[in-house]
Amino acid sequence: MLCVSFQVSHLSVLGGRNRADVCRRILKHCISNEVANQYSWHGRKKKAVFGKLPLADAVQSKLS
Image (cartoon, rainbow, N blue to C red; front, side):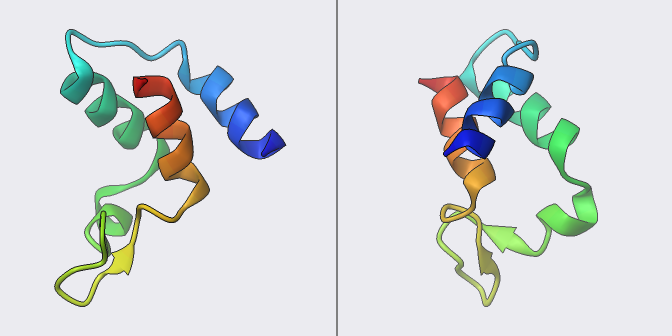
């Protein structure tokens, strides 16, 4: 959980106009397009599950 707390505090400086913009900026900052293309939130279409990653927890914490 400490890692997630650090990620949230680090990501808190990233802002945006709305929740979608903030989410997009955070993910652009953290992962490349090549990595992002390998994930979906629920793991559909034979992709890895993003929703179970610690980064997903950090993004959700920032958005809530």
